[in-house]
Image (cartoon, rainbow, N blue to C red; front, top):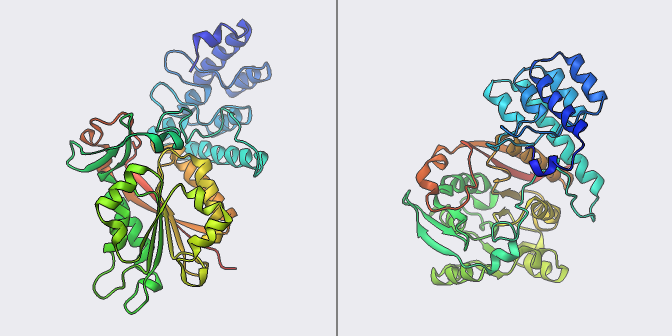
Length: 390
């Protein structure tokens, strides 16, 4: 949104053009908007009162050609107003699916272009058009190394469910997630050949223990007629969580192996990677891999994607991750989920999405005593990815 301090450093004619463009996007014909754009009107300019950009105002008109014009001239697809709404949410509120798809598709295009231009070894740019999927701060919620040094608290929230909070009062993992974890585990195990009666049992890797919900479900999902996991590897780095694992006796369960450290320490180190794969039959990779880390951004998740071909069993292996990417905004959530799908495709995995309703996540009591909400949506896009067999 327009910052009065920023405006002090902007030429008066540029501010004037920005204000005229905002007004034109509300009431003027397309020809007038084109004229202002040719004069150099800034499409990034946002008003001070609402924080609305030209794309927000244009979204109210339900004119797809106008949205395309503004995006082609540099309008920022994920600019948010004072209520954290992008122009995509304006389209959704008006039931304008076509307009929303135009903005979503521009988000996917710009993000993929960003990664293509950055290259595999280039640092992420600070372009305002890139999705901010990781907080740009050094608090325990924005930086994984800071989080690993922070003190955690286990308690029961107002909703009656257990939760883990970091030193700043941010939710690390909360009990409302369990129904989602149930769906993850079911989709990852129920049809797998090694989970069927008479089979030897699955090899499972979970990265990020949290409350241990998903690990408990992996252990319990097998009935008396189905085999327990043959091997269940848990990678966890936080010292307090490692102590919690010992207190609960999880490290003593048959087949469970705890790797104390960050996943990068094991999976990006060729010598350690060999040791990790020793836990799988013939070193061919795990049957099921699940990732749910805290204070890691999309760059970290993408780096995990890139190691998957080395650690996932190629024929029947299944990969899934906690999909909280941009989960306080439906347009950013849709774009980031599509981005993940495309990057998984780049490393040879096909992704199927399963839509799960989670209205309980919106109840106020869930978030009492929690500093930052990490979820605002009523639906969850659950990813199941498998190696693409040519």
